[in-house]
Image 1: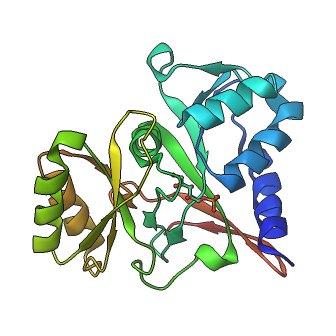
Image 2: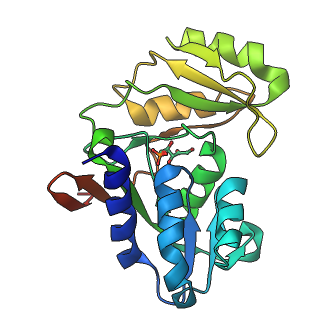
Length: 220
Ligand code: 5RP
């Protein structure tokens, strides 16, 4: 089975997690795009959705699914999003699509985080995928030097600005044996607006699409 077919399986499995008359946070990326398409026929079950990116917001609108600004809603009942890597503790590297800051805000505000992924995303240890860091443009050089001090190799994502008009540094080779501590160190660098390391807010559930079907895993 191809990766896209597995993503579709994970996306369809997430339909079981739509909160009845509740607020659904929507992540970003190709797996989430498939979820949004599938959600169209179930949108009447929801109060509304909140999107983690302009792209997801526009896609929700395109499918005529109600979508509100985050400031207009209270708590998010369920947040559904993909990942670039997820470890057995359900800590993740996210941000391949550059939406990590808004994703982390919605994920942290949500009562439940459901990660949808194909089996290639499950890893024993995080770190093969670079950690995306959203950076205030005027602080790019300073932040890059601080990231090198942490052992990382930052690479500017050329020609890319986030929805918040900031730049992304993709950082390779960061020491990821203590994800919680590293996430704190990254957040403490002035000029860093957010990192794609999701250690303090791991997923609660993982819908992992494998060639043998979708495995539903709960964080222990
Ligand atoms: C976007 C993300 C995505 O969830 C992550 O990149 C996975 O994307 P895809 O579903 O396309 O594999 O964090 O910022």
